[in-house]
Image (cartoon, rainbow, N blue to C red; front, side, top):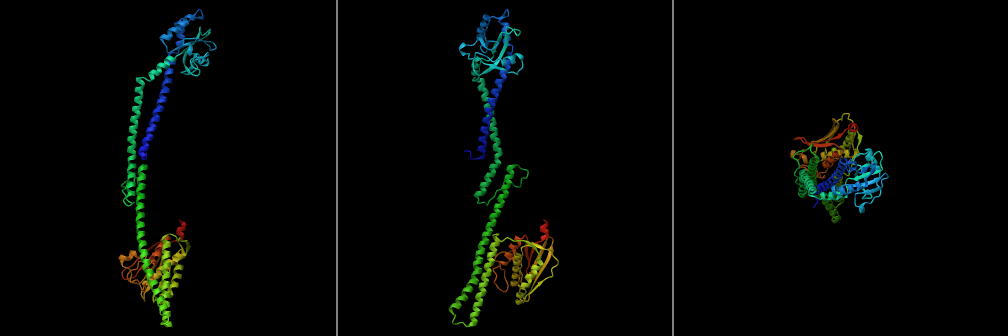
Length: 494
């Protein structure tokens, strides 16, 4: 029943109103009683003195006992709300107008009486109630027979037991019930208004909850926005809705990325099975031929078959290494250890390493004299692997008599390296796919020894180091692959 936020808020509001109503009733009752007691004591302050003078209780400087008893009798009939007591100078009760069986005290404290006579206290001043051992009540008092020669005190309790009995009846009367119903109606109206306001305040939260449930039930694919545009000046609910919109967008983006990764994984499995099957089948075929026709083959044929099997085994080993490195890069297991170093020297070393192979393929490998360049901040071994992959790709696609040109230049806070071959190039429609795993365009060069992973590995390495890589292929001028790395000084300053 109280699972929703609105129901819980309604319960809290109800309990709050009940607590406020109870507290109001207690405070108002106590304050009203205090006010009435104070008012009653102020109005009847001179009641005891007037009784002495009006009823002629003092005769010839002494208290008239007969007149006092008659006063007791008459006031018990005329005004039963008061109780009259005669005290001696020590506060002992000498006589009284109350029922003898109900008087429980023999003495009354004189401290409130002195404060009353000296007018040194604020009203209400409460004195001892002779009918109770611990209760106090408002009173009026006067010294008798006179203030100049007091022999005792006439002590009048303003609200006696008769008054309390009548007060209890009045408290249960129609007037109090009407007041109670008025308070209840006011609290009920306040509760109803509060529930309506809570409903209005939680309506947007309820709407946001429905959007979240719909988003979940759709498999996190269909997202209905909470707001058409961001609400920077909204309240907490609006900011929560904007955060949900951003979160839902990010979730959909990640799901789409996972779907694309799954498609890439499927293509990867298909490509791996295809590219590994060819060298493995060739290796197995030549080895089986050697095993079955060993006696029929001469030494030259055996050496040729073994050389082909060894070449296919190396090809298989190289493809497996590339697959493991690509998987490591995709899983972010390979972390670049960046350090400042001269990129031009690394490029020259790699070019020297490939010069012999280029001459064997009748390809001219040329490095333009690099200008004086600052250090880059990158991983040396990973950057060397990028250069090797780019040269491997260029050599595989450059015909005999062709050229491969390398160039370095500074581009702001970056150093750009370009590797351009004179091969057949890449059609513009396929240019965006050359960095995908297992992509091999038409006319892939002089052999199919590569699985199409070199450029994909190069892109991941460059992106891990914060650089960029791109490829351009103007018609009739081969492929030009360029990558950038950040300057060490620029990164250190940041």
